[in-house]
Structures are given as structure tokens and as C-alpha cells.
Image 1: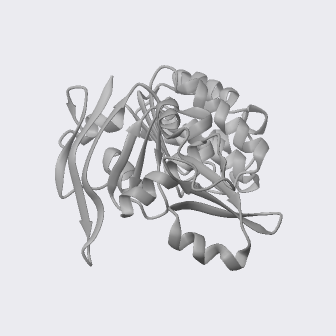
Image 2: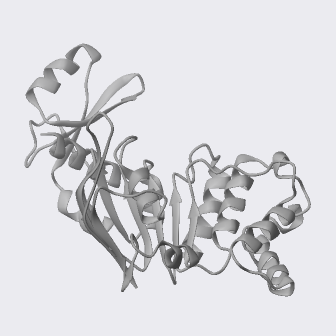
Length: 291
């Protein structure tokens, strides 16, 4: 199974181009969609999830026309939006049962068995009778995955799922996504590079509504090796380096700016070659697309 997105565009009021002729192929497994805030990721996810219309373009999931057969898509879709609202005064068990009925799972025995399996999978079974208002942020996100898995979907979309989670909750969330992503399509939209590095075999970077990279993370890393250089500089000299070098990122290390520079060879002997990570790929592609 694969999703084919062709020439997808969406412009909001004020001539804001959220999607600008997006073309993308998403195959079975974990697919990471990276981009800064406001890049168009959520617009793309909501369009694939049949929650809004594009101005032009097409989306096909194998032979299924996503934009023109929305009900068929929703029957096989699990969706965890960036803002996942729940009824806080009901228990996890009650709400999953209610959502299962809404999804068309009408047989009580079937619902009971499915819900118990999902609560076990998301490590929420012992908390099933607690009101959701008492859940931590990570537990609410795991509940979000449980509801997204109702009905055994073949496509799951998760939008910024680990924002605000502590490291332990984030790791538990990774494990769940990794397990379910082995046999279906899981689209993970995020601005956290580490999420994609840990989970995804394929990825795309979107910036200002345009796809600036689609590749396997390991290929993107290999392509950039030998072209990123690092140096610790004084704060006062940073503007000079910005003027004379292609700086893709800068961060404070022990109180001093550490710059990463894109160059085919060492800018000078004071620079050290970097073992490239996915963050370097991300910043390089964003920088190149802006030029």
C-alpha cells in the first residue's frame, strides 16, 4: 500500500500558501514529516485525513481517491491531531466504548475485546476506570493512540504527538508507534528531528508549503557527510562569521556560540568536521530552500 500526493496546493486568506504544489509518495511503514512551525505540516495532515479541502491536486491511497471518497478513507483511518480534546469527566473505558460505537463497531462483545487489547497495548489497562481528567500528558497521548487504533486502521496520522512529554513518556510513545508502524502506514508529523531519527525509515522535509527533501534518513545523512564544519566562536565575532560563511545553525555550548557551517571543504584549519546528524540535514535543507 502507498499514498500518492500530486500537485497539492492550499492558500489561506491573505495569500498565505500553506501548501505549494506538494508531490509526495508515502509507503508502508513509519514516514516522518519534518518542518518548522507554520511549514504546512498540519494542513497537509488534515487534508490527507479528509478534514479540509485543498485548492487543487489529488491524493490516492492505492486506488482509493482520498479527496472524493472521504467516507471510505475514514473507515480505514486513525487520526491523532495536535490538539486532542477528550471528555474529562468520563473514564478511559467509557470513552473508548463510546468512540468505538461512533466508528461503527456495534457488537458489544467485539468492542469489549478490542478495547481491552488497545488498553493493554498502550499500557493503560490498569487505569481504565480512571477519569481522563486525572491522566498525565503522556497518558492522554497514549489514550489518543488507543482511540486512533479503533477499528484496525491501515493508515494512522499523528500530528506533533510528543510535544510536552517527558523523556520516559516519549520513549513509551515511540515504542507504541514503532510496533504499529510495521504493518501499516503511519505518518508522523513533527518539528522534533529526534522523533524522525528514532522511528522513521522514510521522511520528507516541508518548508513554507514546499517539499524540500524526500528521502530515507540514512541516505540524507550520507549525502551531507564531509560538508558540515563546527567551530566555537566568541559572541562578538558571530556577525562576522554569519557574513562570511554559510551558517546552518548556531547554539550555545558552555556559554559560547557553536556554529555549524555548510562548506564543501574546511573553511580554515580552525574548523572541525562534524559527524552529520539529522538536525544538520534539516537546517541545511531549510537554508537552501530559503536562498
